Image (tube, rainbow, N blue to C red; front, side, top):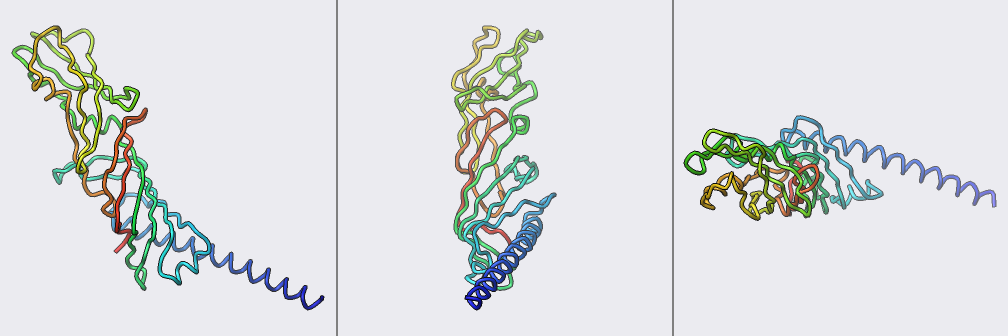
Length: 245
């Protein structure tokens, strides 16, 4: 009995030491991965990296990690023309099946899914915010974007008719979709500007707009979009997503 008791104590101690070693190793790996991702993506701040699954050390021996969660705040994505940037808030991605090289200089996830938000004031930069002529004596421009409920964006437009600004801005509910990495906002109906009859194409030149978003981390792509209280919520996905190297 005494020998068995001693054996059990040794097993418990070794098990505890293994857990401690495993947690120290995973914390170190998370820090290294975050630093590499910051360098690879040229981020202004160090991202959050969380390696899931236990034990970590046995995953390392196998050369593959089951699940890594990455969080990036205020990510600046390319806006499609190479010069402009668009800020994406709170980008969260879940990387599955992450395989890494022997020297840990590169890592690639088999698949990735995630979420992010584009604030309305950021998306507003894409719309025509400067007064534009839509008919003789009539100019209009978008002055605000907000949540219209039921997945719609409320687009608020200000108009001036014959030199007089209309007392109240007009608004229209718009649908938001994504196609080939481009967020598209299209009015469900057409607003009226002081009763002036204006061609649909001229009105839509103001109310409808789109924003190309390129260069998301690791090559992930936009998948779906929906209007929400704080901005446009997007989901992202990707395969063979590069985390480092």
